[in-house]
Length: 73
Image (cartoon, rainbow, N blue to C red; front, side):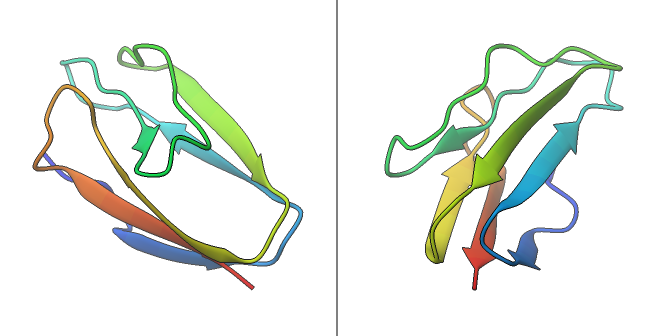
């Protein structure tokens, strides 16, 4: 499993939405604790608005080898 894209660059104030098209559930958990989803089952989404610039790495709490990063400018 992996996040696609693994790295996404957005402007401050952008709402990012993760969607799950896998048959297994996933979560989205920020390394710094700034955001965390509930379980995301197939067909569901999770959204978060990034208000400040910075780099926000995250993982799937269920499959910890799944890693991604949001870069906010």
